[in-house]
Amino acid sequence: MDDGARRPGADEVAALLAAGEPVEDADLSGLDLRTPLDGARDAVLRRCSADEPDLHGIDLSGATFEACRFPGVDLRAATLDGAHVRGGTWSGAVIIDADLTDAVVEAADLSRIRLTGSLLTETRFTDCRMIGADLSGLRGLAVTYHLDGSNLGLANLQDVVWRGVTLRGLDLSEADLRGADLRDATLVDCTLRDVDLAHTRLAGADLRGADLGELTEHAPRTLRGAVISEAQAADVCRALGVVVG
Image 1: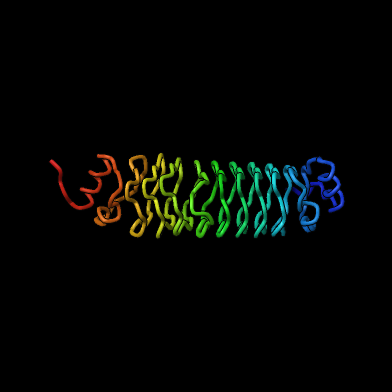
Image 2 (image 1 turned 180 degrees about the vertical axis):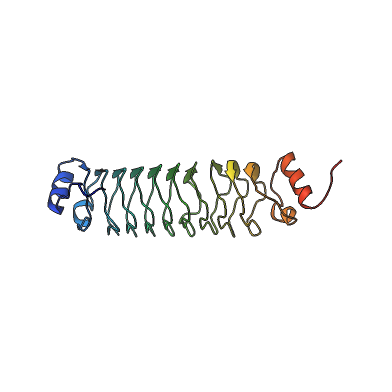
């Protein structure tokens, strides 16, 4: 927010939320937001800002955040069941061991966020900037979250389970996919440039719609079991120095 942004007190914020009114165009830096926001179901904040606000452990079920700037927000063990984030900046957010069931995040800057240990049941990320995000160690046996059109370059995706899912429009350039399970997954318009797939399980994975980048002589081993296109197969042959007549 700019220097002319409104700076309401915590009591005013609490009164607005208690009355079901949105908090708009407010600089909330330095305020204790835990009390007014905790349990204020379906709270709405528009174009608000605060640096590294402490929201850990509170209940934000059904909350809506539109074009808010909360870099470094602490959401450890918070409940964001059904929350909706549209735009804005949440870069560096710490969302460890949180519940994001049915949450929707659209076109937001989530660079370097930490989602380790969080519950993402039917959570949807669309067109988000998630460069350097940490999605390792997510809770739940089944993958029911969705990542459409998001940039996950340099992300930590160790041991993620994407078995049988369809991934669309993801940029996974230089992401860490060691130990990831992509068996029977389908990648559509995805980029896997400079990704080490040596320890990624790819049996049955359909990579025909993925940009695999420059392939090396190790490609036959790393892509073992995956479904690739004729053009990709030709690239593998070229990497091996094989000429197909």
